[in-house]
Amino acid sequence: KGAVLALLSASLFSEIRSVVALNGFGVAFSGIGRLSDKDELPPAWLYNNEPFPYLSPKNPIGIALKCKAMWNERKGNPLGEWYAALASNPVEVKNAEIPVEKINGSILLISGKEDDVDTTGLSNIAISRLKKFNSPNDCEHIVYSGAGHSIGIPNIIQSYNQGNKYDTNNASRDSWSKTIAFYEKSYKNIKSR
Image 1: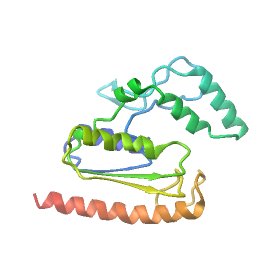
Image 2: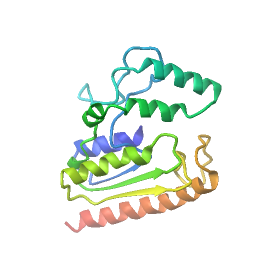
Image 3: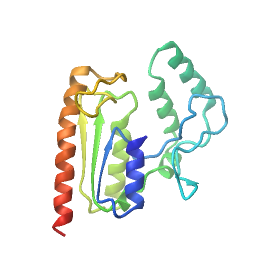
């Protein structure tokens, strides 16, 4: 959820001149409360007490309960199915897109190809939106083959396992150094203006 907040914040506040979204999405999803039998799902993020558009206020209860059972039985890919179900309606997806074209600077998106949730495809929504609005912003999307959702700070043991540990660890080291280089370059570009 933090990567989505980073993109949302950067789209609102022009003072944010560069942003990294690690395993993020080009759309906002609901907040905590998934996999329940409630009719409505809460928003993940509010601004001025108003929710950002998100997928989806209406809970697909049948899918939610199926995914909850999968989670409890440790079978299948419940989060992947859950997010896919929420993102299955193209009109709702379009309404929940993050307005990344409003970001006042460079964007770095980082995804693991083996993430159970399709962070690669969901990040590509942001790239498509930048192209659609002819954004002048630099945007790079790094996708790590073999890595899952646990890409993060190098040498920190992750309990969330997807992909294989070797590739995820290498992706963590590589993406960390690329994140630092990205911010250094962004800072130099800002200072030179």
